[in-house]
Amino acid sequence: MQSLMRFFRGVVAAESPFDRWRFLVGTWRGTTPGDQFGETGEVADAAVFSLEPGERFLLTRGEATCEGRVLNRSLAVMFYDKAADRFRRETFFSYGFVNRETEYARTDDEIRFDVVVEPRPKEFEGMRWRSFLRRFADDEIATGLEVAKGDGPFESYGEVRLRRIA
Image (cartoon, rainbow, N blue to C red; front, side):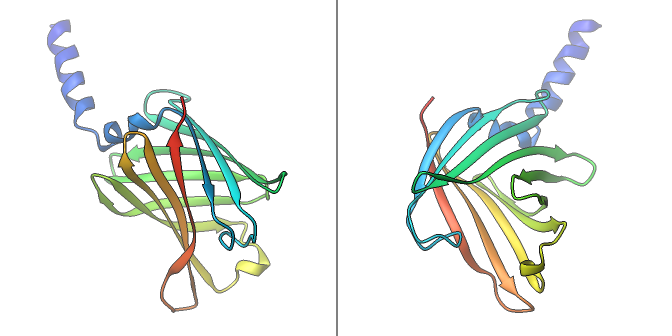
């Protein structure tokens, strides 16, 4: 009976959309050309992904620097919400706000999120945000933000390509 239960747990776990993103575990680095994310210089990004606090969560520790200064540090937890059949992600920034992200579209190689910023900084009033996580290969990904003013169309706010280094 126990082996049958292990078999069914394994089958159920193997069917989770979360499994497609486990390849992220490791250390990633990338750069973003100037004139993105509100910066004029090249932005260097580093991210470490781990299965914390357990195998159903993907924890990301991130840091972005520009010209030797730290722009921000972040801590994100992504998980798959079976009941809603959607990915969710909470990203905490050293700026002092949190992005509460809920999947609105998904393919095998991309998750797109609607973003609610809390508390909403005054400079973000009237703006809507979206983010994405895109897989190009097992060793190359992209993350990015899009912004819309009022009811206007979404435009890229910035995208960074990251490559696995460990």
